[in-house]
Length: 316
Image 1: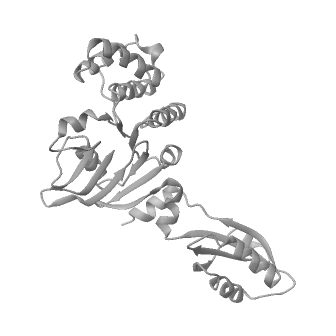
Image 2: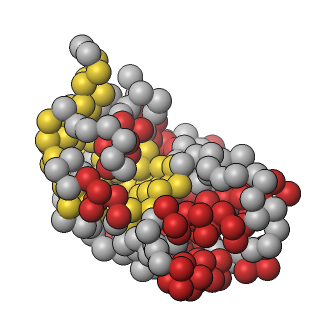
Image 3: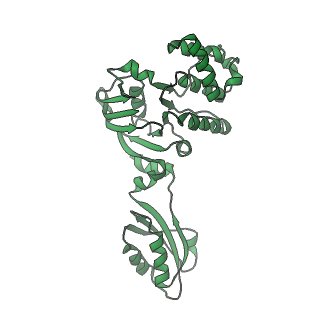
């Protein structure tokens, strides 16, 4: 549904995008992340037809955003950070206006308004003046306007910015439901939002794509492997820390072993390790304890937070 190939964009001598490429398929909800100045907003402006690329290409549902711009934009629904609306209009009148701008015939507009209102839980607010709505409901109006023409691709820019926790939960649920039958790009700085909603994450830094992975596997991609931790106590045999360290290093797939501080490591004679491997080696760590007569008191896989991954990938 979205195909970006070697996309460049320069503003004078400044290169905002330095040749990024990615594809997004039907039904994917993708988090689009990056620090300020990474090129994220520039990419979104190119995809939505606001600015052209300097070079490279981007297509929406097979339509080039430059040479076939109008057809590409017809495939898009777009919700900017501050949802545009007219405060003095009633919700139904505003959605009718958006439908007319989209070129929907009168009978089709009515059906589209009712469908979008139902999908965004707005049916009981259609006759309310927009200016009297809470920010959460204003965001729902923006979402309803974005999906009014049933676009297959939806681009959302900071959709929960400024909302309270209850409103955020509602909007996230709406995004999940709306995304069940659409391709969604979700731009946000809230990492919990990505973990709660997105199937996949793209991270930009300094105009380049530095990560593209399923949300569940992004941590391993960022650190180059899987982190596991193990803590042993001497059992029937008392081995030195260095000896146990050497035994762990010899396990196939282990890339790095380091001493780990922590609550369990404070126990008397405890030996606690952080193990970076290209696979799950917890079974081997357990077998090592049984074979060498050690007491295994902790064994777990580390799951680094998305915040940690983001900092690691975008650190300057």
